[in-house]
Image (cartoon, rainbow, N blue to C red; front, top):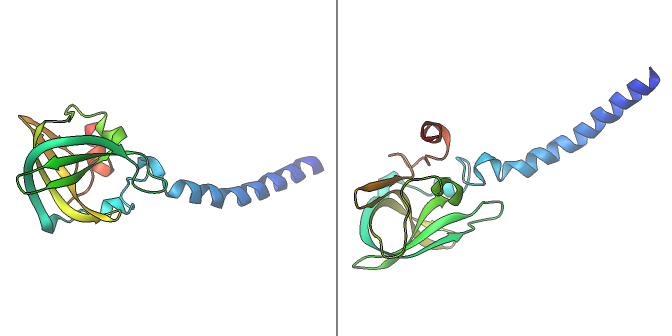
Length: 154
């Protein structure tokens, strides 16, 4: 019986030591790979400054936004007035969508401009390509890969 009690105490002590570290290690990434509701990226979209731009996709690339984040997808879109980076969202989410974007596509992007990782970019809410629509956020700017929007799309 003494061995069993000692084992339980050692196990409980080990769990107490490991548990807080495990929670901290998971907090940054979470189930959305750093793209979740509490991330820095999630708070950039501002529905009050929403705009629409039209142009041609010059570049489609993966990027890593910050420490602990999974890769995301960024477009470089040339409009009549400028060439602007457009952040779409996490690559794991975009890979599951029917609409796939490529260089030379003509697109219409609804989004919000913001300061992202040291430069100005448009955070896309939706991208229209021909008759197809790639939805990324709801009207309030909440990413569809989190919360109710993500559950409905699975």
